[in-house]
Image (cartoon, rainbow, N blue to C red; front, side, top):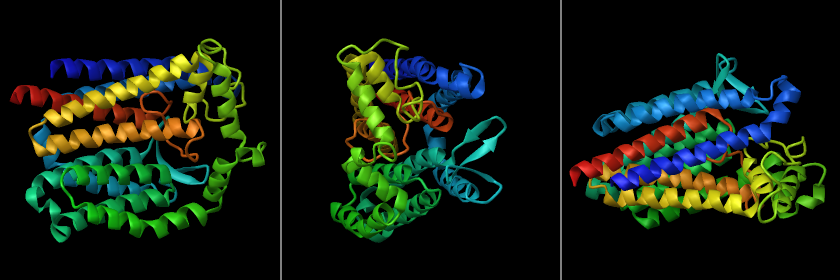
Length: 364
């Protein structure tokens, strides 16, 4: 298990290092133009990274039984924060969404904390219920009610991408822990009308679906961003145009240092660069699942599965969006995209995963 812990730590460190380099490359010109400081976003990212590293080492040393003990209070705290962020003059609104708290010069996104809290809550629930996990009334319904409260609040922000991620991770934990597939299938079918309303009866989401189907139908409007992403990825070729030499970051590709940083990687580092990123995420998932399979404690096993599933899903969705395989969602690329709360809680989650691996090593 020591080798697995070292590999997970090294993979995470490499992804973070790539993120630092690419954030500077993708944001320097925009930062100089809008802020008068070419390293504005890099400096902020490094501060978030410092907080994330501290959180990771705290998570590596915390007693996992204590984490389990506080599963419910953490979930209640997450729900309270999700409520408060919707209150006028408390939550910060940007682009029509209320997702952030302003904390001095920084922003805090409670939905990122809610993702971790839900993973811990689900892991605690399935470990406590044991054989009762197959019971609809005693296990499945309480889990879905709590999940529904969190997801409903996230949707009010609105943030459909995070809501879908939280839901999928929760159901993965329930499924692998022994919940009846018929309950999960019934929940999926019951959610289809709601999903239809959210996707096809909300104008901007409907526009995203239409753009996904044919971005060139509105190439100077709604389809502009994804087309520029295609141009960036296509321009890279096998080995890229060279680090720092991207043309799409010159105010062509919006969100080039956040949600679409993968496109800049493809342009500057080419197929080799994007293949390396995908390989690193694959190795992370592979090693993370080894930790889950070796965990003896049901709580630790479910917790590891939830953490690995969350990071894997976010990476898949982000890469799928930039490549045009999925409709546009506002999810960053874990460890690489610029962003505060996401980076901090992703690193904290890695710390918990390393803690579980250490616990497995001790038990064996």
